Length: 147
Image (tube, rainbow, N blue to C red):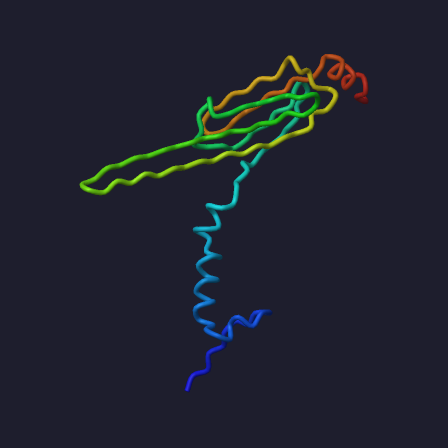
């Protein structure tokens, strides 16, 4: 005789048929399904040089036209939206696949930013934003340095 231990739950719904409940738990907690339901936000690297800030965002598989970059006061928002529709017809079967993905990230800009000197480029799946600093911020930094 073999003893099999079933996972216990706080509710007594397992008493009727614990195997069925375990199968449904595994199905709905599966990574394949949950990965598609979770929204993904691209990773970001932010660096600062003497004359500018650089924001690098990893967003492969998008086009330049998918991005939308807004600056509102001291807040910069980077968002993207992509819609794909693939149709294939074979014999008597027809299959359509829809793919929709979007994200939005916002960052607070410091007071030293020159809003007229913001540039964006998309190369090799990486969006690169260069945010220039005001001239007086660069000069003030030079005056503070200890020699």
